[in-house]
Image (cartoon, rainbow, N blue to C red; front, side):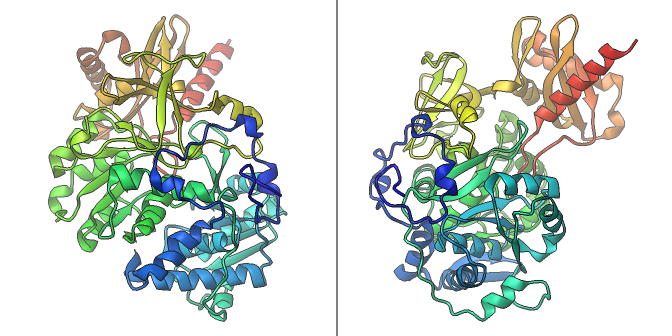
Length: 561
């Protein structure tokens, strides 16, 4: 089998190649604008470059991963990954091109397994630890997965999924440390008897390395396919230019490694530059602040809600080592960015990325940050604001965000969805943005977060940003709620700092506050106080669930006699 570049694939299992979208539906893939991208060979294995080559270049003794009060060097990680790769091939029968489901919290063994799969020529499908059996079954069926590697603590749901998805023939269980001792940890026992060396499969640069499933903010997860070249490309764009990664960095954060934001931030990026990461199996604002203090962390990655929660506690911790902070997963509200800056003196990098493009493509850092703006297109990518027909819009006008660069959307076995996301060679992210004369991109809304009420277009996140400025509001979400007179009205779901204040007086107070801050027609005509908002495991707000709830309520009301 030959790939589009003419290089023979190393994959024996043709599933991935056969389920790529037709070549004419691919976005434009541009590798010419960054010198490092032009230097990639036609045949390469991302694991070789990020791990084996790093050890060969002298990184072997340097700390790579801090976890559970332990430290794993680059050499130690390579040894574990090699022995896991041997088990995959020699004991579990992995063939190049097979998909392997990975299931674990953020720990060193998950990283070792990820690299082992790539070394053996397999394709990683890393899953969120909180997924239930039904959700796992969907991924297993879609990616046709016969082999899984799983932390023993997460066995129950995967075993239940295996009952639903008989294609999953084998599961190799491991412990967080990879040390034999648990009776159910078959992978640990097998790798303990393997030698450390392994001959990596000579994959083509365009062989698929991972299938990342979208996190479900708009419904059913979709598989996005990324090759070995893509894995290296994201390392040589955002962290090299905007973030300014270096070997002395120690990074930590909350995103799971199954989330491509977390994969890049906490594994790929630091390893590309010889740095170290602190992996956390559990996350809370206190845990993250303690980690920054105890490990002298220099860079932190989390979602806007994380920074907002931590800002109120930073005075209790020594954070002098912290130099860089990155937010992603959803738009960073201006009040949150300003709050963190006031508390720490650090301007958050608001990184816009997408699972479909693997990682960040718009951001700004340091003095280039403008509060409220996402940033500028990073080196390696291009962006445009286009109308419904795909025609470019002038600066200042809101429209659909279109992006292209060295990575791009290739959905797994979904050509119809591919046609929606990729048009005229551009990736259409589903975001509504405007660009100013200086090339800064200003978030307006998700395409489906735009509320049309009595003929007015109202961006829900704009109303959210205002509500978050009120001292009584801890969190909020704003969506369209069906209304007979106006078509839809703006409805706010609000989590109060003091739940005892959930009363009509507070509703009016918040409504008047919004009216005073932005155009009065944008105020929330309905306010519902809730204890928590629906979010994905990565922290993304699931507004689609609130919209569905409102639609169902309206339907029930219409059906009443």
